Picture 1: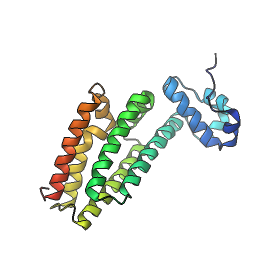
Picture 2: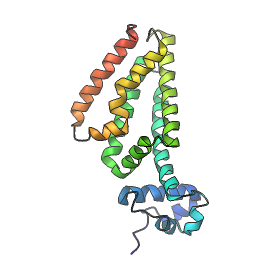
Picture 3: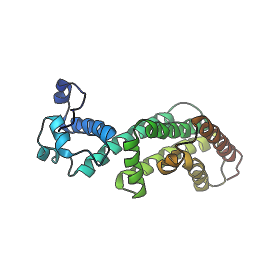
Picture 4: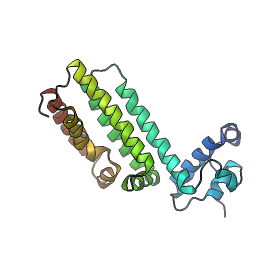
Length: 210
């Protein structure tokens, strides 16, 4: 028996570009059924097309699932870019950036476990979408650090070591594998730990400790 189609109105589905419709339907099926249970045939049926037509846009089911994960990663990058481009002082932006990334990861874990597991699997195997994401996130982090150095908010001895400190200190809170390990820790405790770590990072950057 076929699963129910996506909840989007049919008229809206038809109006959207085919690849956009397929991604929306695949995201919905992934959230409800998990990556092993969804099929290209059912996604095609929900989109009102043949499964052969799906392969015009995505060469495989794995590529379609990766595209769903990539869409989420881009939304996170957009959020972080908005913070990096904000007019706030660099130290405030760095704190907000780390907190927003940690909060967004935790929210995905709580609200969409199947997509989070796909994200973890892609991270474990270092798939191309993860490598691109890491590069983009590093660029945004560098932008905030360099702004802080230019404005005198940060005064590190070594720029690369400063970047390494930020990455290492925030790793537990923004890497999906460690976020999953901390799933049972109350949010209040994680927030306290992140706040303490962030305070140490900002102090180290401001007082030439690294």
